[in-house]
Figure 1 (cartoon, helix red, strand yellow):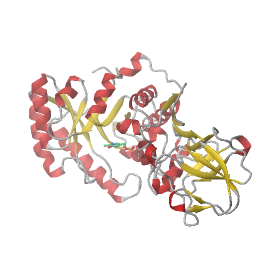
Figure 2 (cartoon, rainbow, N blue to C red; figure 1 turned 135 degrees about the vertical axis):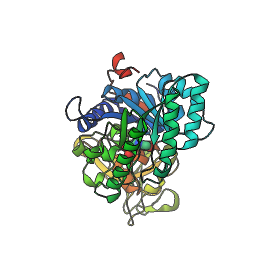
Figure 3 (cartoon, rainbow, N blue to C red; figure 1 turned 90 degrees about the vertical axis):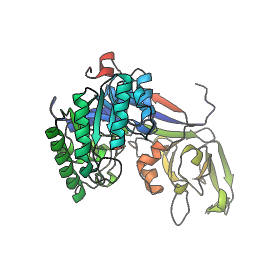
Length: 406
Ligand SMILES: *Cc1c(COP(=O)(O)O)cnc(C)c1O
C-alpha cells in the first residue's frame, strides 16, 4: 500500500479481542457468574482507533462499550454497532436527545444533568436509561453522597412517569492502582451505601459498577455486575510495579514503527539535534527516525546523557537486534539514534519505538518511564497524522455486535 508517511502504528485487533477475553475470565471466572465487561473506547480507543477497537472488544466478549464524549458514542452507533453503550461526560446544553434517539445509556453526575435528561426524554418520547454516578471519594465528577437522596427522589419520580429507568449506580476510584490503599475500601463502602439507598428508593438496578482496569486486575471484591477496563483492553497495565502486562495475561496491541530516513557517519565530538544535548564520543553512525513530538513522541523523553537516556528505539532484527536510546532532543518530526561505529543499518530499515515487548523490544511502558509519565499517555497522545494499520482481523458475527437485545 502506498504511504506518504514513513512511520505507522500497527494495531493488532486480535490482541485487543484476546485481552478482553482474558479480562472477562478475570471478572467472570465461571460462565454466567460474575461481571460483564464494558470496554472503554474513549479518546479514539486510547489512540488505537475508536471503531476497530470497539469491534475487537465486542468480538472478545465485551457486552458494553464506554465513552467519555457523547460524539464518540454516536460515532459507534453510526458505524453500526448495536451493543449497549454508556457515555458520561457532558456540559449543560449537550444534545442529549440525539443520544436517546441512538439508544445510548447516559450517566447522570449532577442534578442539572438529571433535568437535562428528563427534558430530552420528553422531547423524544423515549425512556432514558440512566446510570447515577456517585462521587465516593475521587473528588472529580459525580453526585456527592449528601446530594444523592434528592437526585434519587427526582429520578425515581421520573421513573414512575416513564421518563427514565435508573439502571445503574456507578463510581470511579482514586487510587485503584494502589490496591491496598485505605481509600479503595473506603470508596467501596460509600459505594455499597449508595447502592443500598438507590434500591430502597425504588431503583431496579441492572448494573452496579466501580472497577477500572486496575481494580479489575487486582480486586475481585470491586467487580460488582460490570467492570470498566480501558487501558488493559489495549494490553497495557496500570500497575506496572505489580507485574508486567504478560503477568496479567495481556498483550500490548500497538506497535509504533518507522523507517530510517537518513543513516550517516559523523566524526567524534559531533553535537546531535537541537541544543546539542548529545555529543558523539567517537566516529559513529547516526540514524534519523521520522517521528517526533508532532506525532506524540514525548519531548520529555529526550536523551540528555549522562543525566538520562532518551526513550528506547529497537533497531536491527533477529540476533543483531538491539535497543538504543534517543540521542539528544526529540524534535517535532524526528529523533536521532546513535547506531554506533559498526552499524549495518541503512536508510529505509524499520525501527520500532514500542510494541508488544515479547521479543525483548521496548514497550509503551518503557516510553512512559523515559518520559516520567504513564503508558496511557504514550498511546493516547499518538498523533492523528500517524497512519494506523490494522492486523488480526476479528470475526464479529452479527449476533456478537448486538449483545443482549434491549
Ligand atoms: C477512563 C475511565 C475508565 C477506564 O480506566 P482505565 O484505568 O483505563 O481502565 C473507567 N471508568 C471511567 C469513568 C473512566 O473515565
